[in-house]
Length: 287
Image (cartoon, rainbow, N blue to C red; front, side, top):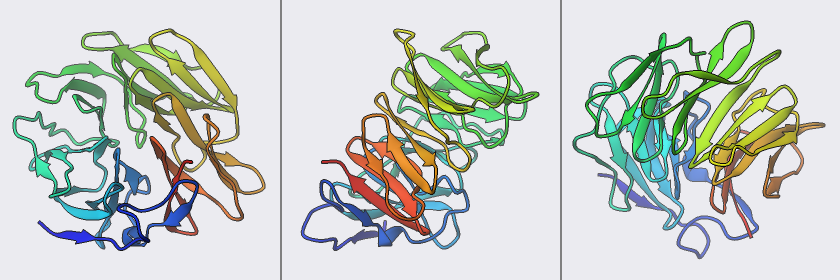
């Protein structure tokens, strides 16, 4: 297992509160533009082949190589899921990433990256959605019409996805054995659904919607977004690309990146906000 340590300032990991720094160690382009992305206290990045094959620790600055690579893996805090033969669940650790034993591998070709939350996996394939515990042999299958590219989203009790009809709508169902139901539809496009814990968020024509699935409360943020990159959700905080004179990044807890040029492709976990500017990966650490 290859290990390397970054020399970034005089701190254990990259960045310091209130500062945004470029991550030169993640300079290679990824085939899937949704990566690099945060996986908890790690940043997943790509090698020269364009596949996700490495992870940078934000605690120590260490880079590890993954035992299995993928173009579009599922991502959760400290976990990477690669569907198909030879895949599985990778647990990220300072001494390298290891494949977990006894993990359910889904062999149907996905139409979008899978979703994982540490305990479950959800995957969209042509004409169906399936969700299961990561260690389960049996999976819940439902015939649907998933839109390509958009990954599913998991909460503590639901799986959600985007279907394409006359427009794009968000559907969901309760786990483990619910029935698919329309969550957000109507004229226009409802898309980019993401989940974390008991929250779901998605993009509508001129807004980002944040739903607390436990209380049923919804927050609406009137914004112009969703044209190039998905939104990102962590612990009830949603971040998006704000389109105006140029593109900035805004989060619902007040964390923002607004400076000359375009800031795009947000990924949020805890105090960290990953984004891209001028084809370079940057990390902002909150005060």
